[in-house]
Image 1 (tube, protein in one colour):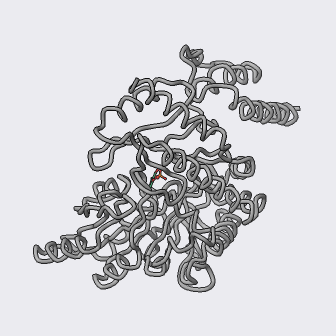
Image 2 (tube, protein in one colour):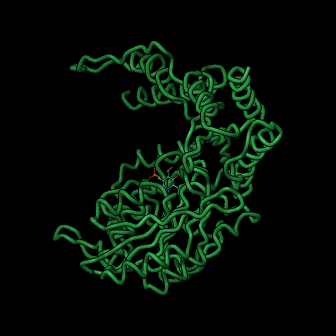
Image 3 (cartoon, protein in one colour):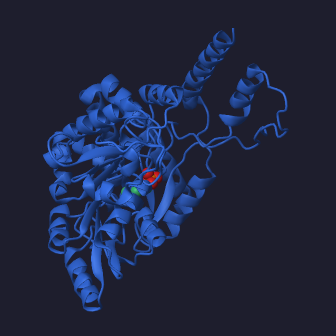
Length: 455
Ligand code: PLP
């Protein structure tokens, strides 16, 4: 009876989630102004499921910023999908702690499979592919966790008293945070403004900084290149940076959290040129691969670079000769993290995923075109993927005015940012297969505010 009751409740919950998804196009993207508060009393006796479901529907859904809303254009998307939700559900249901292959044999199978499938989709070099070289891939929780793991191993590998790390000043702060946590000085190499208004890392400045540091007794242990920076989507020259890392015998990490997925498109595979030089390559399947947070894939060319440093054993755990993912990551436990991606790849197929990525790009293209057609506006950095940064020409005042009005508007979630002191509107197509009419609507809102401010 209990099983049946829980099953019915869960089915009801799934219906409710489905209705929530359907409701998104008719509600505001931002939370309602007067939230219905969550019940605060500690439940001493079980609360009836219907009552909990009611709280979810009246307090949880409406009080959230709706990341899946068609008018969500802030941050990078956390694209989820039913297949991903199904995968998470199975993982929760298995309730396995997949620290070793013997603790959860299926986890190792799934990780190997999805890492190789995705590696094949991205056309990664054989060294990263299980069974073809010394390496493989693993699903981590986040890009931050991936870079922390990589940098920790780089530090342990070099075992020097004076380590130093490098990345561009456009890189995500998770790289700076990893260095901070590990007590490694990190040099932020200025990006070089290119013809597209992007700021890729300047390799000449990197070499110069390395020379200066070496003279002062530092040892370069970690260099990070980025494909698709968070602010403007800049792409670093991986080939040149990779060669510098190789010369310095330094770990070369690639952070492609947002943009890496686009290399699945043959027309954009070139963004990963140079990946063969990477020690570790990371991209988030939570952002553009329909897996929802958390799901971040990292490949390593030689897995011993992780296991040499992260392996710890205990008497109650048998040592094994097979892969034990506790030795590839900092925490001991993990769930069957590859399941959402396993479900997504099967249910969308490579073609479905490519279609999703191209839709996202189309939304960016349309916004770029609309901006280009309005003589008062300028693009701050040329679009490579979906992300478009644009501003009102001239001083920051009008752009700031538009950004402020956008912040007050409940119907749209679109944020401002700054690049080189210049304010801009950072348009990032949302996670729903972007409906182009919503892109037009977003542009009309911006234009309306600009009209208001200039008339
Ligand atoms: N790197 C880049 C380029 C990002 O844009 C982000 C987040 O948006 C991250 C890293 C950090 O991602 P995570 O939240 O998975 O740690």
